[in-house]
Image 1 (cartoon, rainbow, N blue to C red):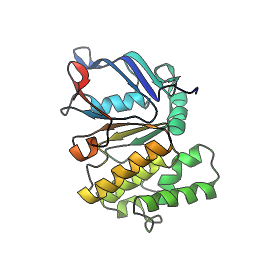
Image 2: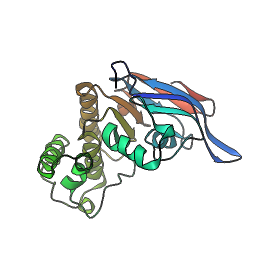
Image 3: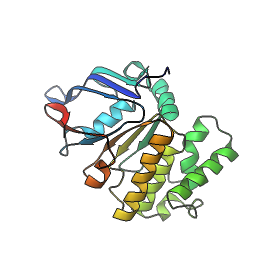
Image 4: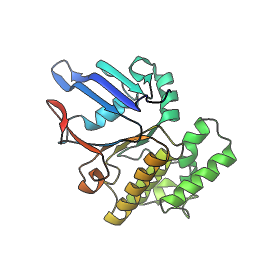
Amino acid sequence: MTEGTPALRLAGVGKRFTTSRELLRDVSLTLARGERVALLGESGTGKSTLLNLVAGLEPPDAGEIFVDGVAMHALGADAAAAVRRRSIGFVFQAFHLIPHLSVERNVAVPLLLNGVAPGDALGRARGMLARVGLGERGASAPGELSGGEQQRVALARALVHRPVLLLADEPTGNLDPGSAAVALALLDEQVRANDAALLIVTHSEQAAAIADRRLRLGADGLRPA
C-alpha cells in the first residue's frame, strides 16, 4: 500500500448476535503503522469478537474494516484468508496450534501458505522459536508443551511472516511474569522493526504498558481508558 495508509481502519463497525442483542455498535478506530493500542474492557463486551472481525474470521453486520487499505468487510472467505495469511498475525487466546504438526512446522505454516520454500520456512521458524526461548522444542508435538510454552509457540507463529497488523488476544494470559516480559518485548520489537501495528486485548497492566494508547470497549463503544 502507499505510504501513510493505516494498518487498520474501522468505521462504524457493528455486530449482532441476535436481533435483540447488539454486541458491538458504531466502533471506529484507526491504527497507524508503528502504533500499539491496548483494548481493555469487561468480559463479554466483544473484544475478542472485534479481533475476529478485523481478521476476517467473521463478517461485521455494519460498518467498514480496512487492513492495510484492503476492504476486509467486502471480501469473501477465501479472499479474506489470503489477506490474513499475508498481512495479519493473530495470537489467539486458545492457541489454535495444529496438534498433528511439530512445533516448528506450526510456526512455519504462515510462511508455507505464502509460498516460502519449505527449507527456508523451517529455518525462519526455528529462528523465531529461539527468540521465544523454545529453540530446543521444535521437534516436539504441541501436546507435549505446557500451556505457557504453547502460548509462546502461538506468538512465534504470529510474528514469523512479519505481518503489517498484529492482533493479540490475552497473549500473556498463560505466562509467568518473566516469560510475559520476554514475549511483550518481542512483540514491541517486531512492531518497531517491521513498521507494523499492534492491537492487543488484555486485562494485564504489564501487557497494556507497552501500548501508545489504551482504549476501553463498552456498551457505549470505544473510549480512552
